Length: 116
Length: 114
Image 1 (tube, chains in turn red, cyan):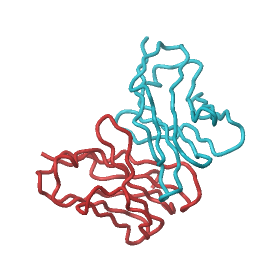
Image 2: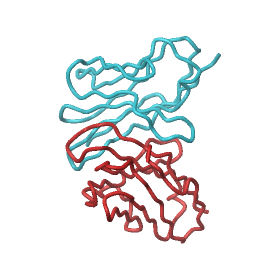
Image 3: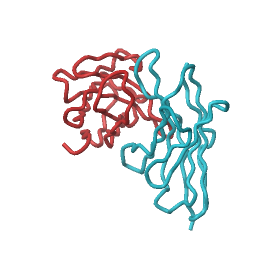
């Protein structure tokens, strides 16, 4: 596609529900990042994929958070047993090349998650 | 640890006035530095980046930024602000130690008054 696409745009979950957030990166982009942006804050790194390999998951806040990119393109961020503190905008970003090559990130519009 | 500080939570400038948004970073090696802009409901868009070479870098939409190693700063400037520049601006540093990630500051919200 022309840009990074994220779905759903908005998600409301009851506390304790599981949610799955989808990211379609730009076709051919090797690197894919997930960020969490709380209200009034900058994006916080969650995890990084190079193709299908998850090379860095140091930012995932707990074992309730899980991300995958099984075929090296579409990625899913799953949050189990959601809690109110998980409420945030989840941003996906991709870039053309892989680790060690710094270039600009292309961001999606994000999924706004509200946990009630 | 790598970090980015944007001292100003929000700034208000008059349309046509000049703008400077401050950014300080903490990083042991030569940093890769970025400025991104985020309009409401939109994803972040890269304005400019610094990797090496000339310390004054030009970006899109008439923005520029100057890298000052001695001050650990990478301030964003624009000589004449337009109403459409109202947005959130994020300074970021590329960190390759302890992983491969871009670390963002908390952002500065720019308001433009007529």
